[in-house]
Image (cartoon, rainbow, N blue to C red; front, side, top):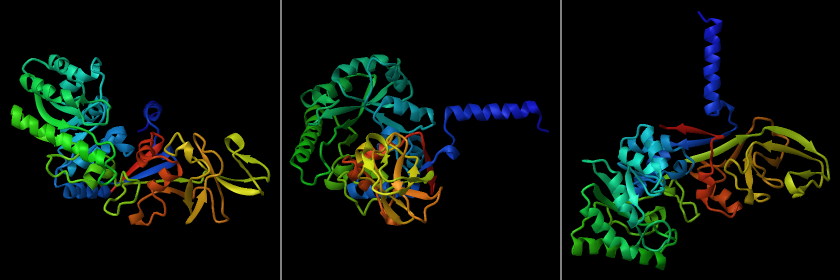
Length: 392
């Protein structure tokens, strides 16, 4: 029997959950993620490189949902997962992931380092001065697995190349640290036969050879190949590949790759249909003024979701089979499109999808309209977008 008290308790519980997260039924933007595409891309990258892969699922898995993607990967036999920050790694561990998680960005004086050590997260050391700190934070009779992140030319967070040998030696001499990996990052591997990339690969190989021959340090997980490295270079002599963008089916060159299957399709709906008189402006800053009376569609998608504002006046969407241009500036929460007679409220609006499945527009197009890269478009997918998973 449902009493007033029970009913009130259920309502309060529902309200509490609603406050913590927007229910999927309340969201008018949907990103459909195909798990089959993720699995296909992992298999292709393994075959292409001749290596096992450590997929990078930083930035909420490039907008695809870090926790769900991690589960898909683990079920598909992925042993190592990479993220950028220790916060992301701890989030994964708290979600129940028990496999190897590698992270390489952190505040060495922050609480996340100690927590990561307690959570058995593999820390990639980016500064040789951090070695004794990580060792000191490791509990007595425990060992922390670490990688060394070597700078071969990108000049970001990493151990300087000329200090990497000494860093490796220092780690191997410390009984609290276990040097299981060595990594670096390529600058422009999306270009084939790029001199800078070839020089980085040469330096990385020379370092590995130096450590083995001159210091008897043989590291088990050696990886430098990001997505471009996997797709454009022979990296089969290393022991691991570290693709990010490509596992989601997107080529970092910005060009469609028939061997990869884009995992994400983003759609929304027509929220409103209305008439705008001639001579009226649409959106901010009067960037579009009507030359005639127009019937327009209002779509609840903006630059707060995934659509870069730099694509204002250049971005297209597909509605009822036809290509439509965004009119005026892209707002934070909405865009305006010219309507056709067939359009009605609730009709589907396609932003991008998988050309394998007949989508007339891809994420490459959205990036091109906005003069940006596909990574940015995907990773901007946020909590207002409903992530729907298929073929799990």
